[in-house]
Amino acid sequence: MKIASWNVNSLNVRLPHLEQWLRAFAPDIVGLQETKLEDHKFPDTALAALGYRSVFSGQKTYNGVAILSREAPRDVLVGVPGFEHEQRRAISATIGDLRIVNLYVVNGQDVGTGKYAFKLEWLAAVRRWLAEELRAHPNLVVLGDFNIAPDERDVHDPAVWHEDHILSSAAERAALRELLALGLHDGYRLLHQEGGVFSWWDYRQAAFRRNLGLRIDLTLVSEALRCRVVAAGIDREPRTWERPSDHAPAWIELS
DNA sequence: ATGGTCGGCACCCGA
Image (cartoon, rainbow, N blue to C red; front, side, top):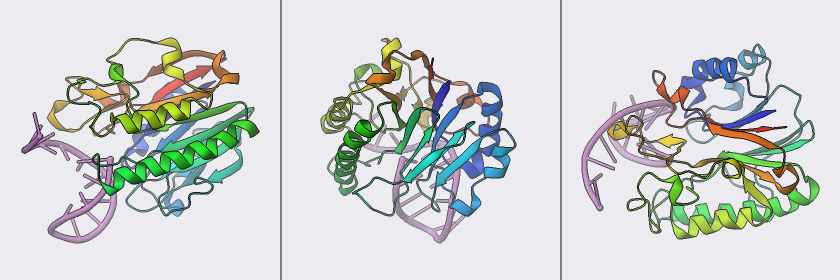
């Protein structure tokens, strides 16, 4: 059972990439972020032709999330209960014996801005909600673009990505640690300890060629699923293709 | 630290 998270940065532009990658990688479940598509424009027919069901919550221009799965999704939930707003950043569904939560965490722009404050509020609301979600669904997978690099191994240059910098700041990392403290584990780190493995590279400065990246796309698993994680990785291949997303798919395999 | 590159959409904003 392969489960992946991929920020596609516009599904309108990236549908051919997604189709090619689904054929090549053959995941069972995929969480997509930044689809940037209103629901009536979601390419569910094209994805069904490849054997995937789709559930989605999108909007024009910004944000937008979706879950693709080979098995039919049940009990679909849009948004973060108790924290209503316009931005389409969360979608959840039950697939087989797994509860899947797909998040597009607020970027936060810069430390100290209003968007940064909103990021921390949003993460606090997610934590309150996931505490309940874990009680209801012991087999929980929380995946997505977290827009937080968990620690120094997850940034190419800790001198740049330091405790006062967006995506690596002390408060953001503390918020992520609070999520993990609910009883969630970073699937990738269960199996790999080395640094320098990234999921996002800025479009500028030839960052991908120079591997100047961050690992901000994560797949978290609950305690009950911990021992079922048999493989994990980041598939850099689609980042090498023409006109790529700035993110690569991050994946885990469950037994 | 700055400036650089994308996508969407409208000549600028968000990432």
